[in-house]
Length: 224
Image (tube, helix red, strand yellow):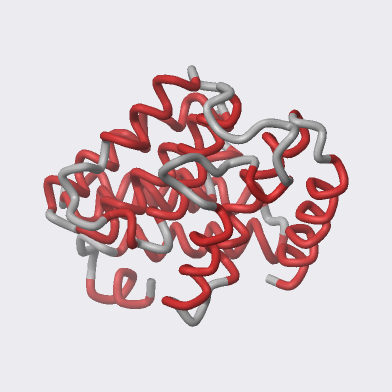
């Protein structure tokens, strides 16, 4: 921000204002100030039309700031545009993350389950090894399996609770074990996966397991 104010604007300066808005919301509850910073950030990002910055900036804005300015459904279009910019820029990490975030928002916005499952499975197929990414990849896999579970395509209420999102091609236990073995900061992708898992657990009647996961997730949020 200092560089922007003293030396003039540059393509990535909008990202700094998004981070300021995020801090203002999460730490100080300064919603009016965050709203102004978010609007300024979007104007700066749009001015330069840099695909890399448009991809990352619009995703960060939708994740951390956009909810105070527009509805969840309204942010889907912005996220899909950000995804296109990330693909255009060749930003692999941002592309996979964008796919995951779009899937999450569509899930929370009650998009059609079969269409969302198709998006999770085939949307990122041109990105090599996307399923081994523990950020966006974990989101995509969690949403895909939740969609399958809610359509009755996975284990049912007679199966153990931990298998509610498991099927012939995916095992929850093996997947979470793999995440723990391949990344140091494994808490966040596991938290994302398990928080999505709460919905099918509850609907299949596994209330105790759903409560346990919800309690752990709440403690994780409080610790962040």
